[in-house]
Image (tube, rainbow, N blue to C red):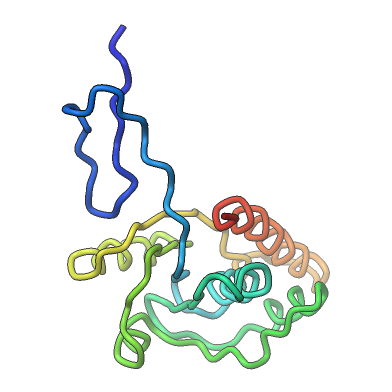
Length: 170
């Protein structure tokens, strides 16, 4: 049985550390800045941004953007308000707008939709960042009563809380 090879946790590196006799997998670096991307920066990525800022905003720089620019979503605002987080000042923006306004200097880019993941991978051609894909259901697709729709948004919110805490805790 062959021993597993250690891999670097650095962005852009994935080569085995074959010349290091007792090499261990690199411990994940503490994230200092994270960008969440979804399709339109209206539901998933602004929720993720607000949650990450709530839990880690003093120690990690957090932003969000969309592959395209959408419109604010009232259900996203409502389910975050239920847990004491205000999303009312969020203005959807595209990745291109964010890049133009402040640049894209992030350690970690987390994509939440297939379209966003393709956009994130395109960014790594010019940006040295680690990309993770967190497939996240689009709650706007759910039909039903207001309460059923809110439940779909709550499921997304609660799933994001778990993943964000697990990933960003130092």
